Image (cartoon, rainbow, N blue to C red):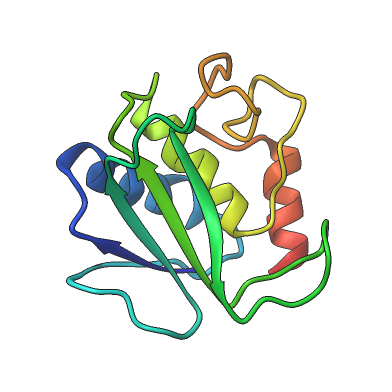
Length: 140
């Protein structure tokens, strides 16, 4: 998991760094986080924040290039995480955990005790469940 933080605001910069180091690094993933002026190509996750307008989304993940497979097993070589500054999320940590979960292949879950719960306002944590971590460890 190679995360490039591209000119993030303070709240998102801290949340991405914290969740990457405290939630994802303890799994079998090899996690690196760095800041970058721009985002190049290759196997990486580029994280941006800006005002994307009223689209009803706090954030989302999109494949930039090199995708293969079909849902639910689609993989992306280069992904973009977008945080929408048009909205203030209920928790920056929870939203960062949620969107990073999608970059490693986790889908929305049914447990409110997971940051991957579809409604981050109703999720009760900024962490992954044992089940979520097991899926990551099995894949990586």
